[in-house]
Length: 476
Image (cartoon, rainbow, N blue to C red; front, side, top):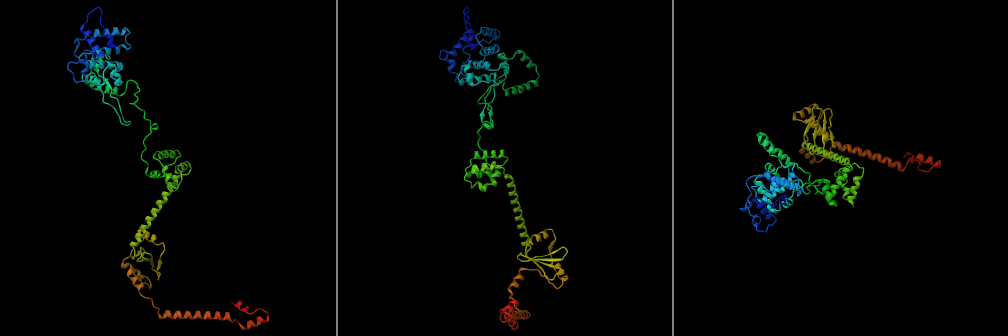
């Protein structure tokens, strides 16, 4: 350690108070269990009385002689440190008004910080600093508290990397006062900074903060900074799409389903479309995984099939909805009478809404429609081609129509007509008797000709040698 190298006694001179203080301090560091154990064994207590003032240093500033001693040690080849760093460590080890533990840590920080940028972050682990200061971890933290109280260091808060789930380091920074004391910045810089206006002084902390954010040295921090590339990480599976969750019942795992989604993307397909189009066959397959991969490699356009299927389903839905609306409109019009705008025809809907009777002005008998009349009838009502007829309109239509009477059909009239028994009138009976006599006469003539035939024809045919009954067959 440079401090140990500087602590030497001159053979030609007697011991001075400075040399005695340095020798006592060196003995307290190297021999913790010697007679000077009071300074080291009681450091676990907070603010130990008398610590750091057992061997007080002179209050006068002899920085010129101190620098000369450090220069002599540096030129003697007893250290491999640069001159600026060596002088800073020597000044830190001899800094007054600080406990011994704080001076040791300040010397370690002076050896670790970047001399070209003293305000930058100090990239050093606690093990390195405690080893250079020859202190335990508890003493090291108390030394940091002393330095922070004296205004020589700044302890930045610990960083948190939320995306990676890691905690960063809590870096240390030297203040302007400590950088000036250690010799990293000259006194002229201090004078210029004191003469600057207030606005420039207000802007300086922003500049310092910006230098703290970017490291001054490219050091690999290992567990602190990581390049989390997604392809190299085994991530937890996300949530499956709702239409692919049914694959779990066929033995598919979540990771496999996501892998199949990537394979389908490479083949310009969607796994959801393939599963939707072939689900009936897929759930009956003996090896559904192999079957699904074969479907992904096939040149079939499953998205077109899904679009056609959805279009057919939508068309069926629209047709069913339209049929329901037509049926509702017809049921609401049951037993009502409608007339067109020109009053040339009158439409009467039956009570059960199964048929309609259309009465034309120039026709005596109505026309009954029992087929596909509901859709055209509802369309005419919606376009106001047909409207419900009033009693006056029915009277006018009946008056202008020859030999016809239009009555609205209601359920009570139809029930009464069905309840009355049908009887045969005299006119109908006479007509039926006449038809019976005609049929009997016709049947009797045919039977007589089939049995006997004509006698003259039979005799002439027998003389010619032809068989009997030939003429009958000819007549028939």
